[in-house]
Image (cartoon, rainbow, N blue to C red; front, side):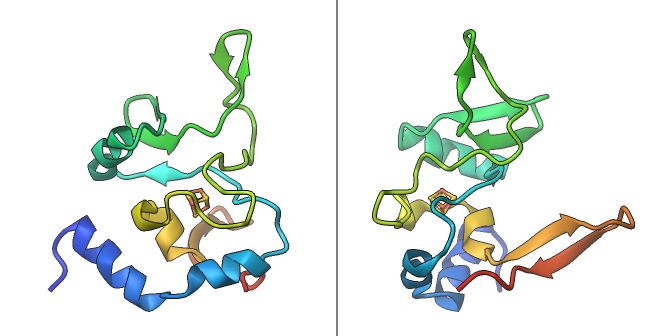
Length: 124
Ligand code: SF4
């Protein structure tokens, strides 16, 4: 039985074992968007010296934002992930956050204002 986030992440790796091969064929030059983290994931990322942004002390994101006048530009809608390597691989493949592990499955807000589980068909 899966009862922790770490256990779930381990199982997700079995689900998409060769995802990095697909990433190499991806048409998008970078992984983009808000890379959100669960609170349980934060220490692992801080241990890896990866900056984490806390918004209103309840939303946590990998810091992929540019600095503007000494402040993070949080208005950027789809910032490129700074952890993606030039060869298309994830720079932290063995430590990917949950949101990256479940991709291409996402929760998206649709035109009717409701949230749905979606499958991104553009993903290789
Ligand atoms: S953490 Fe890795 S998989 Fe996730 S968006 Fe960044 S480069 Fe892509």
